[in-house]
Length: 329
Image (cartoon, rainbow, N blue to C red; front, side):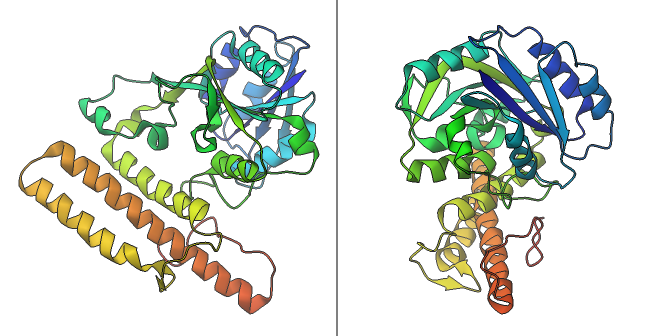
């Protein structure tokens, strides 16, 4: 048996459509269970969930504390079976999704993490500049050329990820200080977990035949949304790769000194692209500039939280869900 686990908040109509698609899933050997965690929705989400009782092997729970990882950790208390499949409330699975993940987990016994394909489901036709976008960090889409086999853990994406239940039975949980918590947060919810598991020796396997389609909403096809995404990505990147104390570079005001060089340099490149009307170069420079700025924001937030910890004597480094030192534009 396996358990599908997803968290949702205030997406009643999208959730309805996703759960409707679940009604057409092929049943994997030994069956499956669906756990939906309502992360304090204030719309019609509770009614949508209730409408699928009897149609799906559904168990629902409410976690009122805001944060996707808070919700997922709550949901882990209700899993059954030997495999936990994680997905999002805006990811539409193909009919054989669970069958393919089950098959891979049964065949690749030396692997603990399984990542499936994430394809786009465009709400409207995408603009031409979409070809300039890094589709992984922006839209959480996998590379269509990726082949089955051993995969780097950071290439396993949250809308289509399976992990052996024994890992969670040993006490492993999601880091509740990273990932979606309203509109202002460092990205990296599932990535933090799989990187941590990788350091513990757990390997990841890519399952190209296990496919979900990730809804790309109309508002996500605005360049302003993409640039804000770059800031959140930068914040999460810093936390994932530099905030563990191994960064050897110098800091100034809590920020790596190289960012004081790289940010102005990228700003000059963006200005030059604007002057010469190089639209693609301007877009890419703006993305990278916001990514670097996000790292600076994340660094300042972590430095501030460490000062608070040091003053209070708390053993835990807490990253606020909304930065109090430097605000995202």
